Image 1 (cartoon, rainbow, N blue to C red):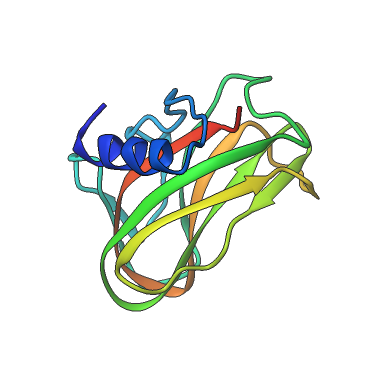
Image 2: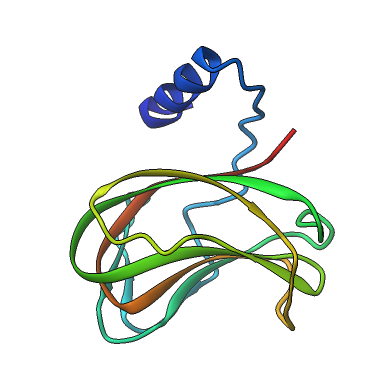
Length: 142
C-alpha cells in the first residue's frame, strides 16, 4: 500500500472497521473521454468542458448488484464544478455523492439503480468539473 492507503488503513483501524485493500481501480482506465487527461501518475484532470468520464472496466461478476463498495479519492485541485463516482454492476449502478471541494473523500456506494452499463468503475465530471482527482481506492465492503 502507498502512503495514502496507509493513512486510510490507520483511520479505519482506529475506528475498528474491518477492510480489505484489494483496490479495484487500476489507475490505467480503459476509457479517458475527451476533456479528461490521464496524468500518468495516478491522477486525472478534467478541463471542465462537459459531463464526461474516466472508466475502468472490471471482469464480469466482480461488481455485483446489491453489494456495497468503499470508495476513497481526493480532489487535489479544483476551479469549478463537481465530480462523483459511479459503480456499474450487472444491470444496476451505485451513484456516489457529488463532491466540489479540494479534500479527501470516503463513501460507501451500493449498486441499486437500473442502468444499461455493466462491470465498470467511473468518475463523472458534473457541472463542468475543472480539476484534478487522485488517490483512488475502490474495494468491496467486507
